[in-house]
Length: 136
Image (cartoon, rainbow, N blue to C red; front, top):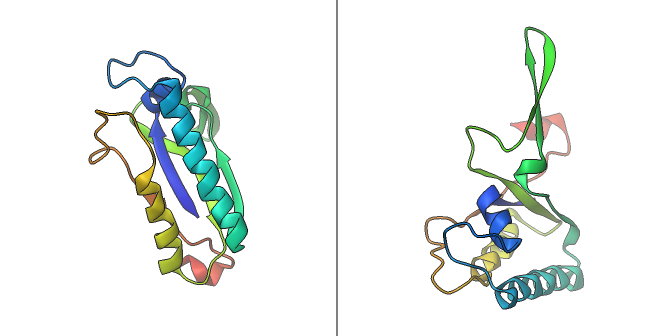
């Protein structure tokens, strides 16, 4: 599974809201969507695509935790966390190295001029556990 991260600020930028940083134009957003569509299509054509979903903005999230044995629900965004899961793609491929290679293509994701992705961009690759023996 390839896990993509973002923040409320990232969602706001893509929604065209002023975040005080680099502004995403409609052309920037269209380039991002075209890149992702091509990335997914390549995975479909190679037979490695299983599923992909994007998440709504963190502000729409709810966190449920236990406090004294009682579930307590808190609306998002998460107070202690800036970055949250923004979406995922599940691939079925020959190896962990191949999944890493697929995920690395996302490093070429289009972004506006002036955006510094060197400190902000990353994805994780994690195998799915099919059985409890694979949890180790």
